[in-house]
Length: 510
Image (spheres, rainbow, N blue to C red):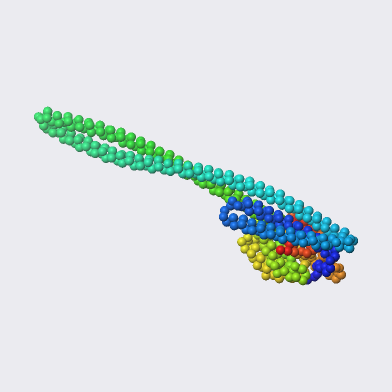
């Protein structure tokens, strides 16, 4: 691996530069840890009234807050130690007066960077407040929907009770109809018996008249019997007429009952339709309720999943990962077995935090290009259940090696622009030291070479790869720097992100 930064052997102006930068980084880290602890405290207080399973999360966050406070205490001690060292260095400032102007320029550069970081922090704070306001409005809408759902349920219960009463009335009417039908059958039987009796009496009258003609001599006795039979026949005829009238009344009542039954049936059908409409309304309200709950959860997830103070966006994303040899080193001579695994876990964390992610691809670069997840030059469909775990396992199995050719990495990534690429996340720990922009036989120093290569990458993006076009928007480029020892690395990654509508995050040594 090519040498990137020379480590000083004696105390000089460069050592003073390192001490000033370290002091600035410690102060910036203290502010970041303090901001993170405030956010975690607010999140723990907001979730204290939720269910038991979330109380465990709140306890974990409080534990993390305590760990952050311990880290702040340790950093405060480091600040005091650095102040003592800085006092000792100030005694020798008389010997390095001519070099002091360069140091002040570097300090001004970092002060400007700190001001930019503060502005971004204020912007993120405003966005967070706006998200909390939207979440509060959604909670009010959710409560309103719950009230409407309760009212609809009450109306549905009233309809069901009314239907039950109608069923009871219908059952009573059917029972009464059966009783009337039974009475009608009895009346018809009586009428048949009366008719039979009339026929029998008529036959008897004929016989009596015949006997009367034969036995006139017995006239008085037979006339008396005849009169009695006539009276009885008249009574029977009256009974027959009365029975016919009762039969007509029963028929009219039966027809009225049939009409009542039809009316009740129609009312029942109308009530069934009202019930169906009420059920459809409840189903629609349930869908609205689920939709609002999902929106509230998405907003809450987006607020919680911000990575190191930046909002994570993108639906078609390229993860551009530096796998040069320095990605598993603290410096040129010191290996760090935890650095590359932490890089892999950070990439997976960013992937899990992208709430709109639909398609993605992972491109590793050193002095060549590698697609660790397969399918070169094609999108991979994102599966939130498995892809992050698979990515961690795949990347941890790879051994970083080689130099840093960032130009070919961006050339490869922008092949996806015609396929809808909208965001790139760059993970690196150094400046480019290979690629176009410098002649192979050039005798430039390492710092001069990296400066030319860095300018070539930025100009290539600005003037060619990521130019604004009428039919497509610019690709957003976010950068994440790991354990960089030189301020030039941070400045390059920051400038790369700012020039391409993105954000920069510097990851310090844990």
